[in-house]
Amino acid sequence: MKATLRPSSDRLVLMQEGITHLQQWLRDLIKIGILQFDFETSVFEISSRMVDAKLGAIANRLRQMSLLDRTDPEWVQRITADLAKLFLITLQFSRLDKLSEAEKSGLFAQCGFSIRRENLMQQKGLRDLWLVVGQNKSQAENLQIRKTWLSGVQSARTALILDYAFGRSTFKETYLVGSLLKGTLVYYPGTFAMRALFKDKTEQKLTDQKPASFKSIEAFLKQYATALSKNLWIENFPCSLSNIRVFRDGEGFALVDQYHKKITISDQERGWNLVSLSGGGPIQLFGEWNGRKLYPLSFYDLQKIYALESDF
Image (cartoon, rainbow, N blue to C red; front, side, top):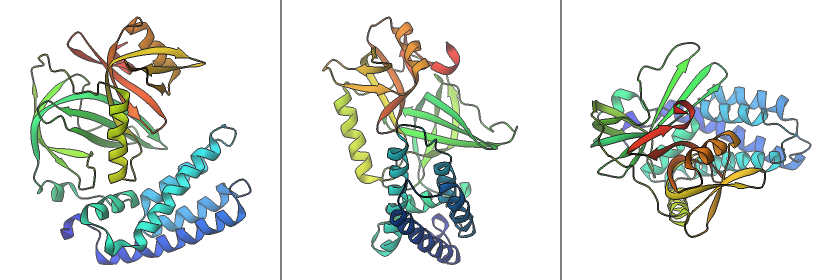
């Protein structure tokens, strides 16, 4: 791995020291027990250590974990999943010399190491026509986070543009769901690369460019399993499904394909929107899959992609 794409030797020493503290903290937690553990007090101390050790992403993961609602019926499941991922990070660090360069890149990214834009731009890119198929905005304290999903018309590759804005500042770039861009994307290194940056781009006149999609839920889940086998750290995975129907499933909503396989929708309001928009008929939609439920972001109809949060 080029030196510009990995932490410096001094930073790596600090990171390894922090990982040692994290591993001991996880062992103490397991000894005490999840239900008896004082997360709020202990997490403040360990997250501060992670910041000092240049492990900012781990510190943020710990803080988010301490904010989980204990009254949530899925609290134990969610907290256990987060702790398991932290433990996997410590295991990967213990065998750092045995990892491939791509695996190291993914691990360093999980710890909070960011490759400088100018260094990434020196890498080879992928030129294509890129459809903006979905966008998801969130906020963590004073930080605005925007995820923009792209689909390559010719390559069928998916790409994620991740942007941040602090306080009341606005994002530097504007991406409109349903627009078409011609340009070269450079992917961040990793075993299953998704995050990318544009080297160059120009907006194109939109023609009938239908985004790539899976014809069945089973085919999508196989792709998701393949991605997880290559990248253990995937949080949200792009999901594009065609010929899918939305239906009421108990107190929530779900999607069903022509083979009667189904997956659950995570958001009630968007479930209602999709039911009213589809009228019970088959549609093509795009969303983020977290391994358990799908969060719909957009759907395709009449040769156009519509963002659920803004167009209806």
